[in-house]
Image (cartoon, one colour):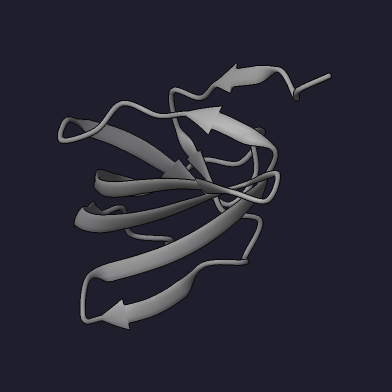
Length: 80
């Protein structure tokens, strides 16, 4: 039996994101997830936390029960 597909409308990092370039990040999530690509969506550290900023997902890969996303941060919310 395959894993169910989860639809995600925001990026929840839980602090696991890795910086690839200045504003490009890479994140691996458990399970297979659908994300909107090439449109701005919210980035949060957790579902309950305030928005960290806005990003555009550039690439989604499904492999070995994980979803790997590469996203570009396009705006950052100040934390103060």
